[in-house]
Length: 67
Image (tube, rainbow, N blue to C red):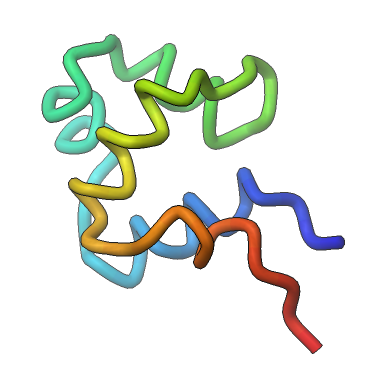
């Protein structure tokens, strides 16, 4: 299974958002957001809900497997 943290980054890049923009929208520091993208910290469900709303995707898209 592909690492879902890398999918978060992929969707952010597709939407032309900077880490700074996402961090501001999530009300966290850029450093903490980058830790999420790099898989250093676990993404809590409440933060995941905010993140998918910002990215305009469904949660299932992050966890779906690519064939």
